[in-house]
Length: 63
Image (cartoon, rainbow, N blue to C red; front, side):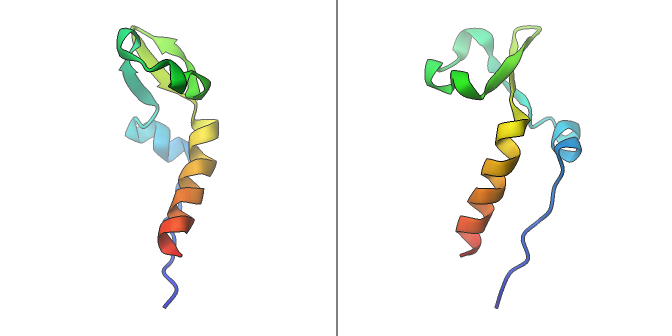
C-alpha cells in the first residue's frame, strides 16, 4: 500500500512558525549554513533549504 505524502507550502510553514530557531546566543555553529538571519535575538531558519529536505525525509520514511 502506497501512502500519500502530506503536501505543504512555504507559506504554511511560515504561518506555523517553523522558521523560528533558537536564541542567537544559544546556536550551534554547525547550523550556520541553515540560518537565514536573525530578528529580535532569534535565529530565522532558511525555509528554502528546509522545504526540500523535509520532502526528502518524508519520502525516506514512506519507503
